[in-house]
Structure formats: structure tokens, C-alpha cells
Image 1 (tube, helix red, strand yellow):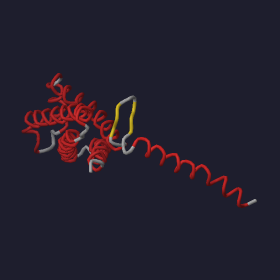
Image 2: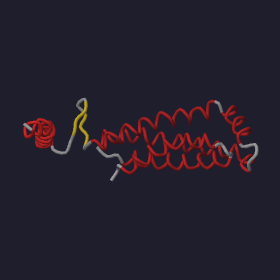
Image 3: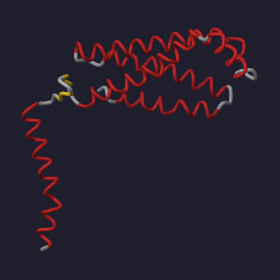
Length: 167
């Protein structure tokens, strides 16, 4: 009786391994989603992370352009007790350029991933956005906005996972 119970519990695992092998034999190392082939699940994850980060940072970059005066006023209050108060307009311009550059690199990277089957431009976009987040994190810490700095950590971790999945 115990042998049969053991077999009943093992059967789903054994059958899934055999099924996975038959899928690999049929499709090789490629997967397909909605008719779009991918090298594997890592590339699909990189593309989805890139789209997610693109949305967050294109909105942030465009907001810095559309409402520049509002952002300047916010930053003046935010950094009123720090040495950065004197370079706020320069800081805002640099962050805007970095956010938009990284976002456009990610958007192009998603296109390039589909067109050329390479995620190299997503990697470049992740690096630019990673540097941007480090700058933002340093600014939040200097302003002693520890909760604001903590809010950046999940984005940074997500980008690091995307980078680490590259090779």
C-alpha cells in the first residue's frame, strides 16, 4: 500500500519531467508567445521588466519637462537644508535627461529584441536607469528623506535582476 501511495505522489513530477523533455525535443531552446518566438524565458522577462521600467521613467521624465516649475519648487523645499540647494536646476536637468535617455533606450531595446533577437539595448537602458536611481537615492539620503530613498529600492532591485539575467 505504501508503495502505491509513493507512486501516486511521484507520478505528477515524473510526467511533468517527461512532458518538459518532449517540449524541448519539439521546440528546441526557443519559446513562443502569441506567435512571437523568444530564445527563452529570460529574454521574455527582460522585455517585460524593460516595459515596466520604461513606463515608470518616461512618465517621470516627461513630468519633469511639463511641470518643471512645480518640480523646481518641490526640490527647493525638499533640499532646503542641504548643500544641494544651489544646484537644483542643474540637478533637475541632469535627472530629466538621464530618465528620458534610459527610457528611450529601453523602448528601442524592446523593439530591437523583437527585430534582431538581442536584448543588448535593454541592457544599456538598464545601466542608464540604474545610474539614475543611484543618483536619486543619494539625493534622497542627503535630503534625509529615508522613506523616499526606500521607495527607490524595489526599482533598483528589479533593474539589477534584469541586468543579472542578461548573461
